[in-house]
Image (cartoon, rainbow, N blue to C red; front, side, top):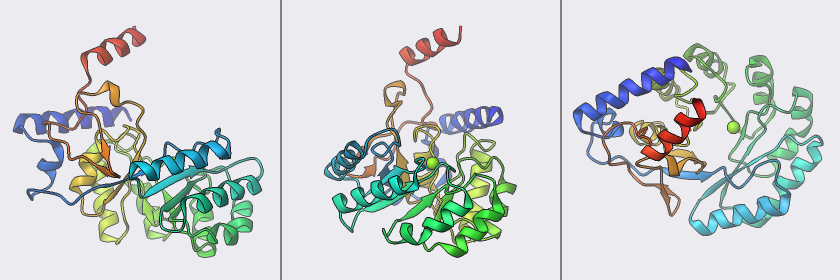
Length: 268
Ligand SMILES: [Mg+2]
């Protein structure tokens, strides 16, 4: 992660030195295809189900075509109730993803897989402990719902192992957790060769990853968590369910002076 900070800063400098946004430097055509956003911000596990349902409906009103909710309650039956309530409220045409953050064990996941499959989910993210490759291989054979993961894989070799074993369908590399943009591009290219969609995890609150998704042929969908927009000169903005194409030179990492001063104070 320390290497990532240096690597991203260098890509940012390179793009700025050429006077272009990073996506344009990586993408050799004038206008990339659009980038759809799905909203992660409506479905946190500590919110009661009514609040999650209301947030998902609000997301649809705002133009999102997909929402993600967290699962991993002490009682998996509670998770199924949440999924059912949201699916009923949003209807059959909106993408619905669930994210377990690795809280289920293999026995639980296998027991509930047929029920999870009933809700036409776009993916089940991190159903199991993040680097338990063998259990993911087992579950992938058992569950029709595709598996998404990658936010806790910290090297291209780790991604290779999951991709080679058919233990992941939606590949979620994060440039802040790999060794930066350079290793992210290697992982995304490997996913592309394997025919797997890349849907990055956004440890950066989309600032860098919107550039990477706009530029990469395997990435047409990106999650949305709007927690740090006030900190950046050119925040990541979604309108009617799609990311705006960044225009400022660089990788989207330029902090506003106030934010830099505030964080500087916090570190001092
Ligand atoms: Mg996640």
